[in-house]
Length: 331
Image (cartoon, rainbow, N blue to C red; front, side, top):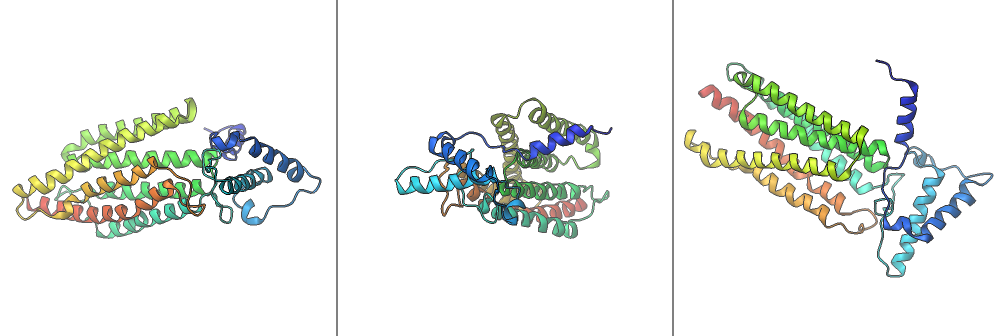
C-alpha cells in the first residue's frame, strides 16, 4: 500500500522537532530573554550569518544555535556566581564538538558497537553450524543478539549526535528491540526451544514476543509516548532476562557437573557476573551529576561501563555453543 505524501511531510517535520522536555534552566528568565534577543538580532536580521558546514551537517539552524550559545553563557555565569548548573530541555549543557551534542555519549556508544560487530563476524566463523544430528540449532539466535546489539548502538550514537523526536524514537525502539531479543534468546537457550521437538513451543513463543513488541511500539507511536511506561516495560523484561541468566549459571556450574563430569568450569558463571556488572552500571543513572569537563555525565559513564561486559558476553557465547554441540553428540 502506498502512503500519501502528507505522511512523509509529517515524518520530516517530526524528525526536525526537538524531543526534549522542559527543565529548570528553560524557566530562567535570563535564558528566555537571551534566546529571544539572539533570535531577534541575529536570526531575524537582514543578513543573518551562515552557520559553518559542520553545524549545518548536523541540522543546526540559527534559532537552535542561539539556544545553545545562551545555555553555554548562562551556565558559565552561574558557575562564576557559585550557583548550581541546571539542565536545559532535559539535558545538561554539554559543550558540543563539531556539531555533536553529546560527544562522550557518542564516543562510548560507538565503542559499544565494536564488540557486537566483531562478535558477529567471529561467531559466524566459530559457531558450529545447525546440525540435526547434534540437535543443535542455536547459531541463528546467537547472531540475532549481535545484530540487534549493533542496531541499538548505531541509533544511540545518532541520537546523542542530535536529539530530535525521530532520533529519540529510533534510539528507544532499538533499545526495546535489543532487550526483547535478549529475553527471547535467554528463553530459547535455557529451555532449548531451538531443538526440533520444541518446534511448536518455539513458534508460539516467537509469536507472543513479536506481538508484545509490536503492541509496545504501536502504543508509544500512535497512542501515547510515555517515558515512564517505556522504562517500566524495559525494566520488567530486563529483570526477567537477568533471572534467566542467573538460573543458567547456577544450574550449569553447580548441578550440570553432576551429570557431565568435568563440566564445572568458571566460564559458566560469566552470565551471572555480567548481570551483576550491568546492574552496577545501570545504577550510574541514579546518580546524575553535572558533566565533568562539559562532556562526561552519569549517562555517558553508563555507556562506557557496558563495553567490557559485552566482550565477556560473546566469549561466553562461543564457549557455550561449542560445549552444547559436543555434549549433544556424546548423548
